[in-house]
Amino acid sequence: MINNQRIKVLTFTAMMTTIIIVLGLFPGIPLGFIPVPIVLQDMGIIMAGELLGKKYGTISVALFLLLVFLGLPFLSGGNGGAARFMGPTGGYLFAWLFIPVLIGLSLEKFKSLGLTQWWWELLVVILAGVLFQDVIGALWLSWQSHMPLFAALSSSLIFVPGDVTKAILSVVIIRRLRKSIGFDDIFER
Image 1 (cartoon, helix red, strand yellow):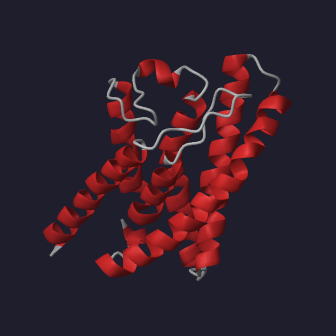
Image 2 (cartoon, rainbow, N blue to C red; image 1 turned 90 degrees about the horizontal axis):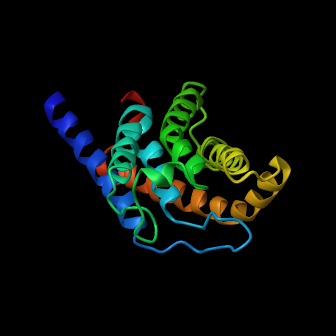
């Protein structure tokens, strides 16, 4: 039985990596006033943390980022390569690696406190996913583009409505998916 569970988790780890790649097929929406587009891939990063937890969610995202680093065109708009990690969007990419850990740990803590309702999960996703990503991305953007920190943080506010919408969709999708595939107790992985 343990081998079957391990195979199931590894299969879903590969599946989440694939979903993140597929979300990159949708081109980013350029904003014009900052060199960071609006993309759907961050929703896949959040979903990996929610569905797979801290360990396997991070493995899934790390595998995706490794493929991008090696030059495969898996980022929105068919981009890839090591240079992407040093460009204006590099902070967002680095933040993606830590989002599944933060979401997984937070959901574990909330579960231990008996807080398993959907709105608690949404709060975790917004704080550990959306807010963390936007702040780290803005800090990197400020440093990399020599933009004043306040300007970089202010420009990140444009992402908040879309990111909150993606967070809501992620919570709804993953909570239903967990029940349908028998991943109700994701927090033990």
